[in-house]
Every structure is written in structure tokens, then in C-alpha cells.
Length: 390
Image (tube, rainbow, N blue to C red):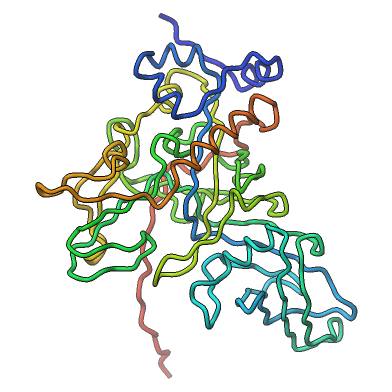
């Protein structure tokens, strides 16, 4: 039987004509219980994905505009949270995990959410003063409608998979994977299973540099592969990496974002982070893509790691059907499991994206450039200072 294939152009034509079939990845997973990849490829044109979880490696560029007389901002804060100003005169970068010096549960993520929500934030800046930028100090309230640009620019988002975390020690650990109770009393995980964007395109056939992305409630772009992008992780028989692998560097206009899809958070005794809604619409080009976009939670595995041991060693693998059930079995006993990402919000995001695609409001476009086929991650080498002789 001849394989059914479609081009990007054919799919876009069907969307324009109102005849395209668009479903969510969760619906595709259910469809795969009764239909073959070939039947899905023939029937379905686009599959939408979504995730809503902590994206610590996030931040926002902001250009405040020049006051009169102008200033070169060298040291600045927003609501007393330190902001990096070593870019140009009135450009700055607000990191999501930067924290208030006196209140560790408040930080850059909260500043980003306040600005996105339309709240005013207090800017305090200092510069040494130059002939072209004579002002040395400024204090003022800023608002998203009174600055030039607010561009969310995130070095590492939407991990392709992420290990689940437990704790073998006899004390509670406070981590970016949440609170881990002693002696493996709980296991936390942070991936939206069959709805997770990069698990539906594990070999990056349709997602690459320049791909449109739903980010924070607006349409952004994939700027580059994310930091710590890793193609060398072991995969299961479905082609899914068994731990943290591919990542994305994403950009988007923060002025167009909403607090529904961008929220600040604080992990107890760890720090601040930014919860972000991210989704992709994946074209079903052929049977291979149909197979990937219909992957089910029981076919998606991740590695359960011990965060109480050096290097966080992997102990065993578990699938997302079991993790999402609320408990898994470990050494003959049931261990409680809990998500750090919201599957409910991921489901809403995928449905929202489905509506946008059908209405022609979300572009279906091939990437301008593919990600590297081979990329690995190395740790930081500790090198002692070498003194010069003589």
C-alpha cells in the first residue's frame, strides 16, 4: 500500500479552505489505539501540543528609552531586584531567577509577570556619567506602555524530556524539582507526557530555527537550539530520549503575553522561577510523523534519578501513565508521585492552539534551519590559576 504523504503547502491550503483536520496530541494518542500510523497520516493534518511548567532559564530584554538628559544605566534595579545593565545605555536583561536581596521568594520572574500584567514597576538606575550621557541617577515608575520593547528571550525552554526526581537521604531536599522527602517518600516529575511538544517530534523534523511557537499567550519564534541541547541521550524503542535532551531558545513579544500563560513561582528554599505556556502545531507529513504525534503516555519513559547522591544517578525508568497515576512501585512499595508542570493547563493550551490553527491565526511553517544532528553537553572543568614564570 502506498504511503500517504503531504507537503507543508498542501496542509496550509486545506487550512485556508477550511477542510483541514486538526487535533491535539492527546486526541492523536487515543486515536492510535484504533488506527494505524498510515490511517492517521491520511486523516489528520495537524497535531497541537502544549506544556505549562517551570522554565528557570528565562528572562526578558527591556529597552526603557532615554530620559532628558540621557543616562547610561550601569547599575539598576526593578522593585529592588537587581537587573543586568551591561548591554547599552538603556537596555537591560531581567533574569527569572534573580532574587530580591532581602526577600528570596521574590525575584525577576515576579517583575516579568508584573510588567506583562500591566502593573507599574519602580526603576532605580545609576551611571557614572559621560559627555554623551551626563545624567547619573534616575528613579521612575515604568509600565509596558511606556517602554520601547519588552522581549522575552529564553536561553533554554521546553526540555524534550526531564528526569523524575527522588531522594535517598534521611533529610528533606529543596531543589528545582521541588521538595524531595527523605527515603524516597515521594517522586516529582516535570513533563506533560503525550502533550509535551518535543516528544511529538523527537527527531526535530518539523521544529527548528525560525519555527513559530505559542509562548506566553502570543506567537513567538525559535531563535536557536537551547543551551544544553543534547542529541546523545539514550532513547527507548519509540525514539523518545530517556532524560533531558533537546531544548529550545525562544523569543516573543512580552507586551502581547498574558498572565494566564506566564506566571512567577517560588520553590520553597530553592528560589524563583517562571511558569510558561509553550506549544507547537506539528504537521502530519507522513506515517513517520503520524507515529510520533500519536505517542501514548505508556510509551513515553523517563529516568528516575536520586537527587540525594552525587551526580543524580539514574535508578530505573518509569512511563508517564504510571507517573500520572499518582504512585509508582519502587523496591516493592508504592511511592507517591506528583507533577511540577500542569497537565490541565497543557491540555487547555493544546486546545487553544487547535482553535487558532483552524482559524488560520497560527502559522504552519517549516523551520528556516535545522538543529545540529550531533550535540552533547559537557560539565565545567575546574582549572587552577596558572602563574606566569618570570
